[in-house]
Amino acid sequence: MILDKVKNNIIENELIKNGDKIVVAVSGGPDSMCLLDTLNKLKEELNFSICVAHVNHGIRKESDDEKVYVEKYCKKYSIPFHYLKVDVPKLSKENKMSEETYGRKVRYDFFEEVRIKENASAIAVAHNLNDNVETVLLNELRGCGLKGLTGMDYKFGYIIRPLLNIEKKDIILYNNELELNPCIDKTNSEEIYLRNKIRLSLIPYLQELNPNFVENISRMRKILKEDNDFIEQYVDKVFNDTIFEENDDNIIFNYKELMNEHESVQKRVIRRIIEKKISNLDGIESVHVLDILKLLNNNIKGKKYIIGNKFTIEIVKKNTAIIY
Image (cartoon, rainbow, N blue to C red; front, side, top):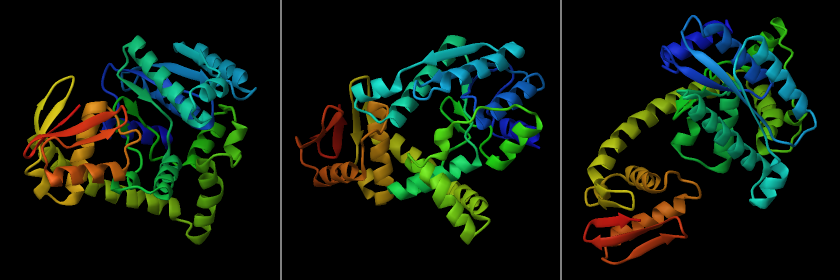
């Protein structure tokens, strides 16, 4: 059943094309081993190749055993194996970041490094249906907009998620039936992170109230995604009409027509402009966007809005601003 689902996900969402090479992110746990094994079984039928990227965060003593386990599987099936060991506890402190945040950065930086080295077209990660529900709840608890309630997509940039509609219980069953004997990260059963608390306490409680909770959230996510996709298509048009000139150093935009749009569209376009300039929205909050809209509404030449060393928005003339 899972093989069929993964195959359909790949085809219907155009995750992998004929002749592609895929970097498979493998921790050695149940999810990633299910991902690796299914892609390994489907690669000939769908005509693609795979390699594996594995990261040891230097946090748990079992990590060295996990490396041996994943590498053994790769050797058995002649799959190229890429390995990185990093002292995340030490480096996270030096960079003043949480271990969770810094570990994620290390992982994805390494996956991208392997992708470039292998000339691969995508990086496959093992997020499943339960992970997506956790993400929706996590976003909601932190306060989010419509996009946050749509959770993760099958494809985002170079990242693909072939297991995204598969429940955790089915993944466990797959591992058991094929005797993959994946490694178990004991920290996943400890309520030390907010996501773990959602997984271990909140979701089971909500399932007591409604046994179909996971399926219902998944259905809600799909409905909201359709609405969000429609809005984003309209925002695309407004954004393209707003941008006047751009180069490596700055972007000049005319906001006359933008200010006639609904505030929801205005906010999304401003976020797009910021992301276009600095390549991400890290640290950009709603209050910043609202302050920028206030600046544009006042429409006073020479007025500026500065966010640290990230960027500056300045009114250069009536209805025209520059971000640099």
